[in-house]
Length: 140
Image (cartoon, rainbow, N blue to C red; front, side):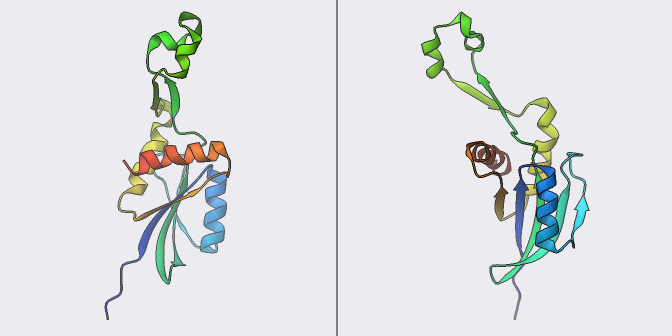
Protein backbone atom coordinates (compact mmCIF):
# COMPACT_ATOMS: atom_id res chain seq x y z
CA UNK A 1 0.00 0.00 0.00
CA UNK A 2 1.20 3.50 -0.84
CA UNK A 3 0.92 6.23 1.72
CA UNK A 4 -0.34 9.64 0.83
CA UNK A 5 1.98 12.60 1.19
CA UNK A 6 1.27 14.62 4.31
CA UNK A 7 -0.94 17.66 4.01
CA UNK A 8 1.11 20.87 3.93
CA UNK A 9 -0.43 23.72 5.93
CA UNK A 10 0.61 27.31 6.49
CA UNK A 11 -0.70 28.76 9.76
CA UNK A 12 -0.47 32.53 10.34
CA UNK A 13 -0.87 34.24 13.71
CA UNK A 14 -1.49 37.95 14.32
CA UNK A 15 1.81 38.48 16.14
CA UNK A 16 5.12 36.63 16.62
CA UNK A 17 4.56 35.78 20.30
CA UNK A 18 1.28 34.03 19.45
CA UNK A 19 2.93 32.06 16.61
CA UNK A 20 5.61 30.80 19.00
CA UNK A 21 3.09 29.88 21.71
CA UNK A 22 0.90 28.01 19.22
CA UNK A 23 3.93 26.17 17.82
CA UNK A 24 4.93 25.21 21.38
CA UNK A 25 1.47 23.82 22.11
CA UNK A 26 0.71 22.13 18.78
CA UNK A 27 4.14 20.51 18.45
CA UNK A 28 4.73 19.84 22.14
CA UNK A 29 7.78 22.12 21.77
CA UNK A 30 9.19 19.85 19.08
CA UNK A 31 9.69 22.15 16.09
CA UNK A 32 12.42 23.45 13.83
CA UNK A 33 12.78 27.18 13.34
CA UNK A 34 13.84 28.88 10.17
CA UNK A 35 14.43 32.50 9.44
CA UNK A 36 12.32 33.64 6.53
CA UNK A 37 12.38 36.97 4.73
CA UNK A 38 11.27 38.83 7.86
CA UNK A 39 13.66 38.88 10.79
CA UNK A 40 10.75 39.38 13.22
CA UNK A 41 8.48 36.60 11.88
CA UNK A 42 10.19 33.24 12.28
CA UNK A 43 8.94 30.04 10.69
CA UNK A 44 8.16 27.15 13.04
CA UNK A 45 7.98 23.78 11.25
CA UNK A 46 6.60 20.58 12.74
CA UNK A 47 4.46 17.53 11.96
CA UNK A 48 1.16 16.91 13.71
CA UNK A 49 -1.72 14.43 13.35
CA UNK A 50 -4.50 15.99 11.29
CA UNK A 51 -7.63 14.63 9.65
CA UNK A 52 -6.65 10.98 10.08
CA UNK A 53 -3.17 11.51 8.68
CA UNK A 54 -0.10 13.63 9.16
CA UNK A 55 0.24 17.34 8.54
CA UNK A 56 3.43 19.29 7.87
CA UNK A 57 2.66 22.59 9.56
CA UNK A 58 4.54 25.83 9.10
CA UNK A 59 3.54 28.46 11.65
CA UNK A 60 4.46 32.11 11.17
CA UNK A 61 2.96 35.51 11.86
CA UNK A 62 2.32 39.02 10.73
CA UNK A 63 2.69 42.12 12.89
CA UNK A 64 -0.84 43.44 12.87
CA UNK A 65 -2.13 44.92 9.62
CA UNK A 66 -0.17 44.03 6.51
CA UNK A 67 -1.64 46.66 4.21
CA UNK A 68 -2.36 50.34 4.33
CA UNK A 69 -5.34 51.93 2.63
CA UNK A 70 -5.52 55.35 1.08
CA UNK A 71 -7.65 57.19 -1.42
CA UNK A 72 -6.52 56.45 -4.96
CA UNK A 73 -6.80 60.05 -6.12
CA UNK A 74 -4.69 62.82 -4.61
CA UNK A 75 -7.65 65.21 -4.38
CA UNK A 76 -9.37 62.93 -1.85
CA UNK A 77 -6.32 62.55 0.42
CA UNK A 78 -6.71 66.10 1.73
CA UNK A 79 -10.30 66.25 2.86
CA UNK A 80 -10.40 70.04 2.77
CA UNK A 81 -9.81 69.96 -1.01
CA UNK A 82 -12.97 68.06 -1.92
CA UNK A 83 -16.61 67.77 -1.09
CA UNK A 84 -16.71 65.37 1.90
CA UNK A 85 -19.64 63.52 0.33
CA UNK A 86 -17.27 62.36 -2.46
CA UNK A 87 -15.25 60.40 0.10
CA UNK A 88 -18.06 57.85 0.48
CA UNK A 89 -17.63 56.69 -3.13
CA UNK A 90 -13.99 57.60 -3.82
CA UNK A 91 -11.82 54.66 -4.90
CA UNK A 92 -9.45 53.30 -2.25
CA UNK A 93 -6.07 51.69 -2.92
CA UNK A 94 -4.66 48.96 -0.67
CA UNK A 95 -0.95 48.27 -0.71
CA UNK A 96 1.75 46.76 1.44
CA UNK A 97 3.93 49.62 2.71
CA UNK A 98 7.70 49.48 2.33
CA UNK A 99 8.26 48.65 6.03
CA UNK A 100 6.09 45.49 5.70
CA UNK A 101 7.53 44.18 2.41
CA UNK A 102 9.67 41.63 4.26
CA UNK A 103 6.57 40.29 6.05
CA UNK A 104 4.82 40.00 2.68
CA UNK A 105 7.78 38.11 1.17
CA UNK A 106 7.85 35.84 4.22
CA UNK A 107 4.19 34.91 3.65
CA UNK A 108 4.60 34.49 -0.11
CA UNK A 109 7.56 32.14 0.32
CA UNK A 110 5.94 30.17 3.16
CA UNK A 111 2.68 29.77 1.20
CA UNK A 112 4.32 28.09 -1.81
CA UNK A 113 3.26 24.47 -2.11
CA UNK A 114 0.77 24.61 0.77
CA UNK A 115 -2.66 23.06 0.42
CA UNK A 116 -4.32 24.91 3.30
CA UNK A 117 -4.04 28.25 5.03
CA UNK A 118 -5.05 28.44 8.71
CA UNK A 119 -5.52 31.88 10.26
CA UNK A 120 -4.95 32.36 14.01
CA UNK A 121 -6.16 35.93 14.44
CA UNK A 122 -8.14 37.89 16.98
CA UNK A 123 -11.84 37.19 16.68
CA UNK A 124 -12.92 40.77 15.99
CA UNK A 125 -13.29 43.10 13.00
CA UNK A 126 -9.62 43.99 12.98
CA UNK A 127 -8.61 40.33 13.04
CA UNK A 128 -11.01 39.66 10.18
CA UNK A 129 -9.52 42.52 8.16
CA UNK A 130 -5.99 41.24 8.79
CA UNK A 131 -7.15 37.78 7.72
CA UNK A 132 -8.29 39.06 4.34
CA UNK A 133 -4.97 40.89 3.90
CA UNK A 134 -3.07 37.67 4.64
CA UNK A 135 -5.30 35.71 2.27
CA UNK A 136 -4.74 38.27 -0.50
CA UNK A 137 -0.96 37.83 -0.18
CA UNK A 138 -0.86 34.05 0.32
CA UNK A 139 -3.36 33.18 -2.39
CA UNK A 140 -2.03 35.58 -5.04
